[in-house]
Length: 245
Image: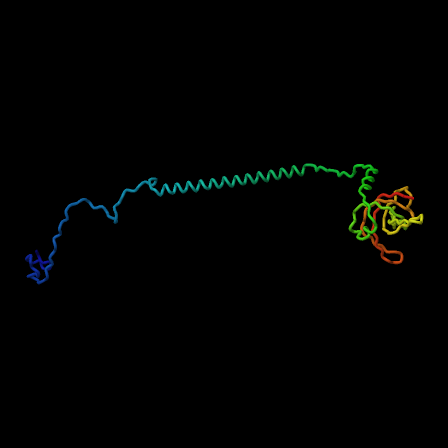
């Protein structure tokens, strides 16, 4: 072994050079490593060969999800198309119906104004048969109670007043007949108010005429006298009458 500074031969165990006194640096002999197979680069884990993409599990998950999404979109589009078709069909039906209704001519039904002809005698008989009898005391106690009822009465006319319009005549009639035992005469008392329409061509009704009449009670009637007093009487609307003179 030689000194690296002066080249002097040195003993293997020398620590300083005998020639120059420089410290000796002993070099270690490299130990040759045994021959082995070439080392593969190590990145922390063993390397495996890569699988092809269609053999990866996540690839098929993506395929399935994509298929489900496409299928759902198709179903939704079909429903929307069906709804639109139905809406259009309903609108078409409504428009067609409206056109049919508009184009059809309305059917006019003329009201029947003619009433069936009835036999006047039959009508008169039916009305007279519907009439009851009533005395003045009962009728005058509460005339409105008997309003609308039909009655048959007999009495003496004590006043006749023709209306200014039409053929209606206002009458005051006494309907209670009083007879005397020793006098061959009668007296009529208890006055009611009545109205009657005289048919064309018929005789007029006069004071002191005794008539039998059939009519409908019109309740209580109040009128003003010539002297300005108010008088209330039961009222009868006469439908039919007969002279008893």
